[in-house]
Length: 226
Image (cartoon, rainbow, N blue to C red):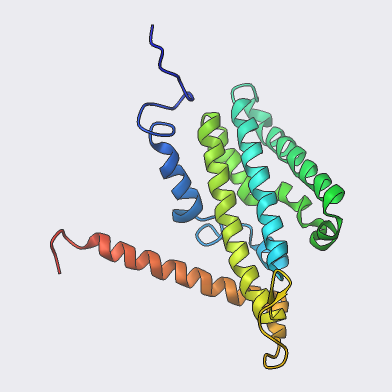
């Protein structure tokens, strides 16, 4: 009898989940980023990114819900009847959203008031539902958690990037610390409003596409080519 430990149903020697862990993480966080590529979660990206602190808390919320819901949906995937799978997925997702919302209300009430209903709307967020349906219902628990973490992190990083630019240009500060003094900087009111988020997101997507295009061009060059 072999004493080698078994990590999960899809795992084989050669890294996390047979080497699939890293590729799954890269796919969710970068290659198929939920905002930059799939264009999901745009509403919250526009609504809560006026300040970096808000963006970070919203990002943590989505990471928490994605990881936990993917784990439990994957664990129960063989027990959930196919006809009611989406109802079951929503119920599991809603449980973790409510849990995070209650923790936020209990320990960080000012932030809970600022985010308003947007934490609760994670229940219907296409990113979370999409990963549950397309990945967690098909894959073992460990790799499903990696997928949830990757997509949540990919979402959170983009929100944080938008939040940094909007708060810096709109308020002259980052995390409430003044960076651009009012003595010489005039606050950009456009960045405080939703159109400012659209503009910043557009530049981020353009930069993302330019970086990928350059990488694809380099990969396409033959070995030893000029």
